[in-house]
Figure 1 (tube, rainbow, N blue to C red):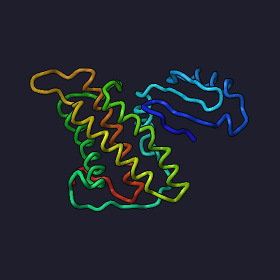
Figure 2 (spheres, rainbow, N blue to C red):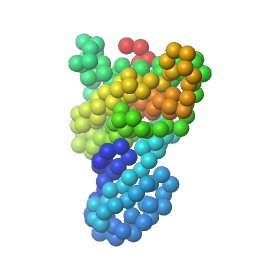
Figure 3 (cartoon, rainbow, N blue to C red):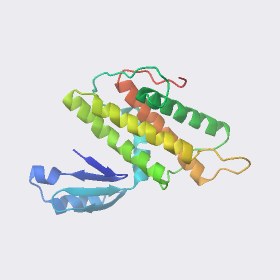
Figure 4 (cartoon, rainbow, N blue to C red):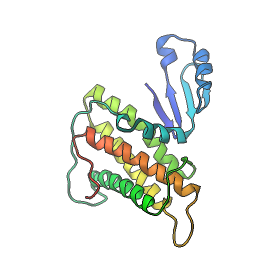
Length: 206
């Protein structure tokens, strides 16, 4: 199992547990496109391009992070920032509408550039989701997964507020805006899958 150490950084003890040559595994991993570095002589720390985390989630689509997670629901009200259910549902709705408004404005999704602190935080929590889903299935406890969704949603709200996908005023869209539309798409996929796994139908309006 991989544990997340930051945006694009993972740690695994597979070599130790299986009694395999850690350096041999590290050499093979370094040959994989998108892997930036592999360090360690027992516990391996793998660094990948955070942008690949984003495109990987989008590429997997409905399969991203999917696991047999026990059902759990948040309260529908109050619809305030103090209600984690509202935070998750609103983040999903924001991601959906960001994509829609971007399309109407002629801003197409582009290559993700995970540069700002808010974007890196989002990528970190996005990378954590599949592992937390697997943990919830293994332990038959949805709470670690639900907490991961809450953190991912909060991180996307920060991206939405601090790194807008739509240009302001009369300025023209650029690569940064296209990148942020892609982040919105990844948020929609991940949060939508998460809500579905917990037994909710993702809503565009709340």
